[in-house]
Image (cartoon, rainbow over the protein chains, first blue to last red):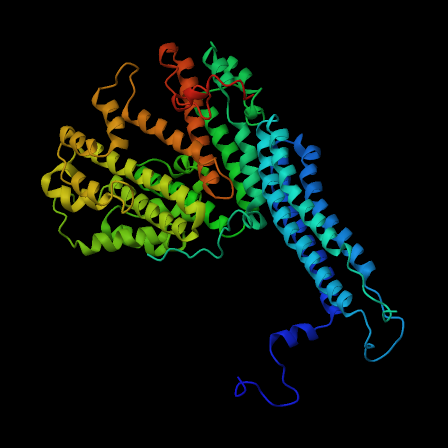
Length: 191
Length: 395
């Protein structure tokens, strides 16, 4: 092993050093970005999936126009979950009180790293589940619009499918909130 | 023959709706414009054609019949076909590649029919304007193209000229060029037929069109390839069986002609290809045809309808084929995010137009006992839906 490790002063000692040297602030903000961005991708995906079918089916059956906007609202809800999570997380990112170039020795390192990783993970939880939920609601909503145009009694039954699909997004935000609950960025050295 | 490669894939469940969601939802909305069982019931109860018109004015055909004075079967057919063409043109203008090429493929069949109509019409010396009025609207060429088709003579040399001057720019040009290559490769050996018969030309062109369409659909992949591939295979088999059946009693059935000429007309796809078509190539009469079809379960039941000579309700083999087609085309509407619904819509609308013409002809000629011999589309009383009659759902 001594022949593999590089001796220069600038080398890393392996992945652990690389990963722990990435700033928790970076992790946390990426978590916010992923949470919001991926949720919006999922919501948008679902909306264009269901919207195109809704508009086409409404040509021959105009009565479905208002009712089937519920599918679009379900998709929109996944974006709202992303926004809620992003706002909660963004409020937890705090600047240190003293503007020093390096953090003091008795900084709350444990809490520091915990917050970074926790917020990254909760952002991913929300974002990835909302992509799945958005696409799922979109496909179901597209079939709902087309089926409703033929037979009005189908609407409520397919809506139940969509409700289950949008529950997936709720799972994401619940877990995300639990994960980020005890994440607090330290702002001063421990007393 | 180089089938055009699709410019993009239609996409699967999660991406189909980007480009094709709107046209697909349109065609599925148009599904509700088919006449229902209740409409057919009212129509068959009518005494005169004015009653028929009254009943049709409550269906989707109200606008189509608005400017008609008195209803006659040919006028009804023309109005209904115009309505189908308007809807199809609307779909075509909303379509993006590859759906646009797919819809164009559907129209090529009618273009082939129109070209053949014009060629055949000039052989019998009919007026060009009358012929153009009879052309199917879905397969129209430019006016100048259509007017120049009958000016060519129906000899192999004439067809060559026709292709090079007129048809080469049209979408059916490649099929014609393949046909010409084939006749050229056979040389001047056609001693039985001096001129190539019009029907053989049409069968050859339809065969090339089917093979081209099937290759295109295959390259689209996904559910479209599965569903449309099946529909086209069944179409090819129907053609092969009909060619064989119609050749009995004509020079095409001579043993010398069977292997060379008739076999050439069988399409290169289908459930009957290749084993079935090579057997069909040797068939000389109806018994042999029946024996060959016994080996294929899906066709033996249809053949038995023909062999029974009509059976209890006087069905012919064409009726049996229509029924089977309607069943398969209705299934093409199941399952979203594929192109099968467009093809099925055109074909099922054609069936409905046939039904309407049949019913009005029966009423005109006062033949009430024949009036029920049509195949309704999306009917709850269809034999393949008899299991669901006990359900309380539906409209």
